[in-house]
Length: 342
Picture 1 (tube, rainbow, N blue to C red):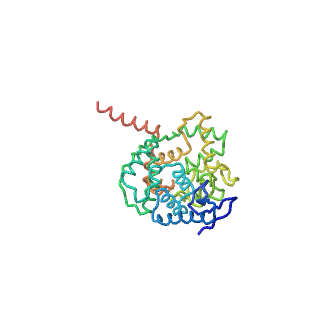
Picture 2: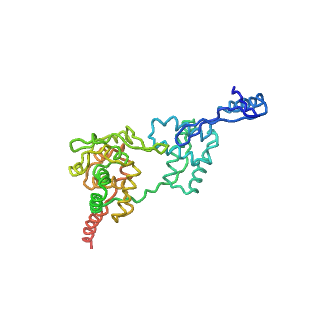
Picture 3: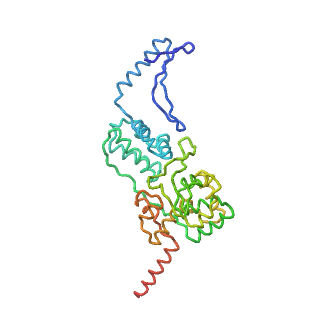
């Protein structure tokens, strides 16, 4: 039993209550009981501990999610953990989190979906939040409860044309060679910004680069080097055009001196000053890579391997876009054929 300590004229007894997370750190929280006498303070603390023990079999939705994150933390990337903790911290499960897991039912989950829609969160964001909630409930012993989630409507994906990419590279060559290096690695090597920022000179070989680590943000906001990539398939060796290798300064370690957010910011600045479409972001160059491969008729299995995708589902859904200039040429071919019908 916890012992009371004298604090001025009063006696105070502290009993461990729970853990909270602040800036990614696990902090112990205590329940405080104050009374005029030591005996009374300890009695109040003991009574509270007894009530807690009586309810030991209960588990709130909030605590179930927190326990799930704790168990999975070592297996997840720091950025994923940061995202998960932000869901809890910002009240995304507010209508549910105080419920005992045994009280969760279809109606409650569907009302939670309605709450998220009323808060004007996107369908994709709601599905991401549910992607944490569902396995947390499963780990807590809650069986499958069918609900209806909002349909995700895939946004129109911007893919730069060859002409736009040439214009950008020409601008960067004069104004920001470091960002040009990143742009080339994204467009011609299908590399993510986290992978680009982690590259070292030793990763480059005879016309190749080995992608084997990433720079990710932890929950405390600090950027760290992760010894593994986003997926198992992300660890890969990419063959690069000789012109790309020749244009990279291998005297710097790492190759890029920026973290992923700084790189994106510099890229957006370049796009603005080069008078290019604002939808043209660094990640659009991965779309460009896959679209070119698709136009050239390269089999999906090879594109997956070169781009570091675990399965072809995400690649096909998000990346196999149509290049605007190629699309116009193909449409012209079709119209020429249709003209013969009249």
